[in-house]
Image 1 (cartoon, rainbow, N blue to C red):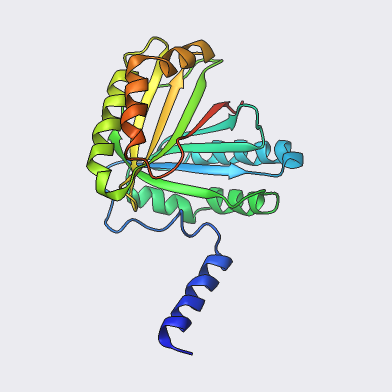
Image 2 (image 1 turned 90 degrees about the vertical axis):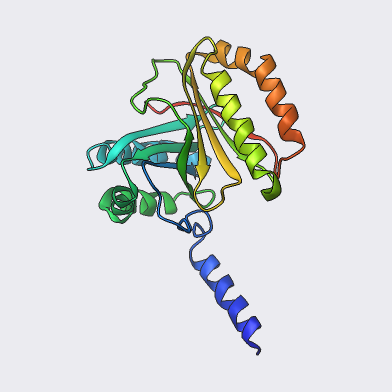
Length: 234
């Protein structure tokens, strides 16, 4: 067997043994400033209640840890067995310590037993963010969107999502509008919005600024526009 074939087999073995490794691959350079993490969790539909309990417990524990600036768990509208965990950490050191701690390892072990898909964690740096402490009221709708542009258009993508955030923050009913950039894939972004209610989400979606952003994105996107709507897990 040649060296290339052996290397390929090793890579496949690692991927099989650790299904989340691709999404959680470390950034090539240290992250400066706060770390923004988005964890997508999908449990079996029959295990929705159990998954909710595990994630509530994780949220409570995480909020007490040194270096955590924000930890929110949201549940997808229409598909309640799908969740997203939105976190902000003071710095990379605090984020990495959390990843090795009991709250994180216990949550992942519990979810692994009931998951419907591998847990997908994406680590980001802030690109266009507002106050970390902004908090939604009851009935708020979270919109979390993964935006992927082709690498040669990365800078165009940065400009487009920054403009989207600036325009979105002026929208009636907006509570928070953040754009973060994936640390190990700088042509991938997460847009995390909070709106006061579903009516505000709809108004934003049909605004001229949003439609102009979609038109610009069409020529540079590397994947489907993955927009998901959630409510906060109570």
